[in-house]
Length: 360
Image 1 (cartoon, rainbow, N blue to C red):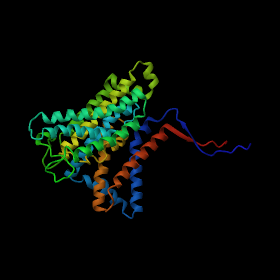
Image 2: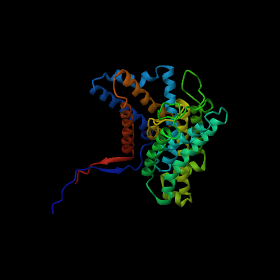
Image 3: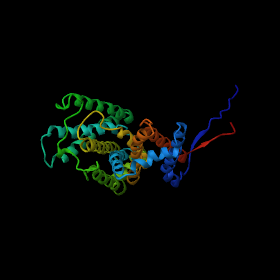
Image 4: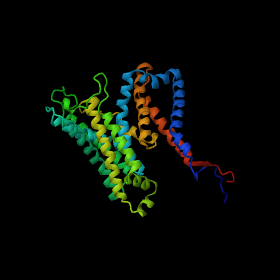
């Protein structure tokens, strides 16, 4: 029998990955994304320098533009810091978009029920309801994971579409605005059910302060508490966590609950902040985009703040590119995909090396 030589390379784990290169990974991914973006714009027949300026600089060249950047970054950062609880535990919750939607439904439902009420306790009640809604929706894949060992990626992802259809049913059915001319939306929230703005000229609201507070709390949990240490150990080695006596099922459920609560608050922040009511498209895929934010920020609270600003800029840049360059706004998703592609690729090469066996 003749043995056929294989020229396919093999991937070998590095004995000691470079911490310095691991730190530079997000910067490398961003740089390669800018280079790829320049090539894409050139192929399409646009001046790459002007196109990149329009995409990344023009949207934040004014105070209003920078305020819009913070509005977009707020839900991304809040969801991403929640996802970091799961990702640090090596649990891949992909359903943050559904948890965001359920948080908006629960919190928005409180505002609709008390639509003719103006009182100080309405907004706090909505925030609590939003957190509960997101947490309960995240609890479903957590229970399925711990009780039946199901794949949390599939279950959490499928629940996204269920949540979206529930919202769709509510805004075209029982919660439809009676004065909305049959448009699929709820009645507007009362003033006491809206996130207070910092300035009437801008859309920045109290959700930004709440997000920064929760990010600080998460930093404290990750770096100063036993629970944060257990999450890291369990994610690094489930066997080591088991031998240490950690309650792994409890860690999984806790991570899901926290992640769902944060996503639910983000959803409530959207409908009680910039939107002011419920309707079908309350989120431009913030729950999925926050996954990129979490990994680009290396699951670190400070890193997530900066990465949320960068990814939020792709939303604003896509709008300006459509307006001034006549390019479809979907180009923003291309840039987000490029960032994730190069981020994962760089991380692969940092932890593994490609080996060609010339003796085959």
